Image 1 (cartoon, helix red, strand yellow):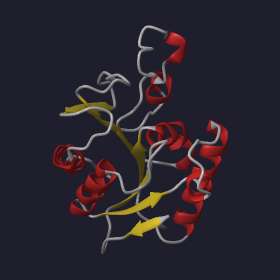
Image 2 (cartoon, rainbow, N blue to C red; image 1 turned 90 degrees about the vertical axis):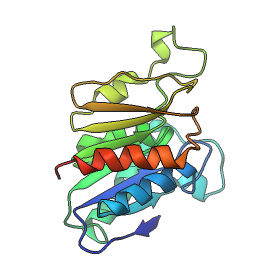
Image 3 (cartoon, rainbow, N blue to C red; image 1 turned 60 degrees about the vertical axis):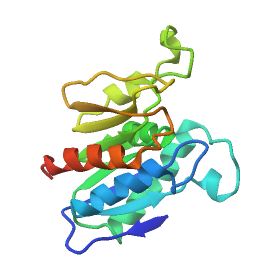
Image 4 (tube, rainbow, N blue to C red; image 1 turned 180 degrees about the vertical axis):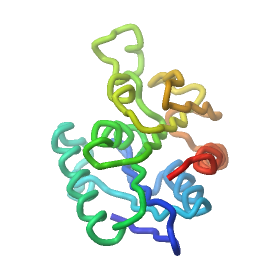
Length: 188
């Protein structure tokens, strides 16, 4: 876990990484900058499988349990007090969506949410959209215009911002602007 606090935070943002990457990805770095600009303390969380040096993610229930344990730890210590925003990139976004209610999150930020595996858009059994649709608090999805994992539609509490690029979201400037603009209108 990498804690990046700010003085007098208005909220705390906990972000998780994607399946094959770590917490230093360009989009997570950009989201951290945007959050700091909006006075949110940030914690970047590495899942235990990555800490152990494994490349393949654990099953969803293990990922969710590890995530919630870290959230509990942070909320009882470093990030106690301010409202909680959760999120992540790709797999980390899925974990954040599945656990948002149990974590007590007031909002969710999804970077490159994988709506479906590449080439499986026509197979409804492969859709991960129900995880995103289950989020009842305000959510931001920042998605590459050419993401082979699909593009979710905006919803009642969901803002979707398409930025140049694909699933890697390498345009840190565009990601930072999208997160900054959304956070500027957020009410924590």
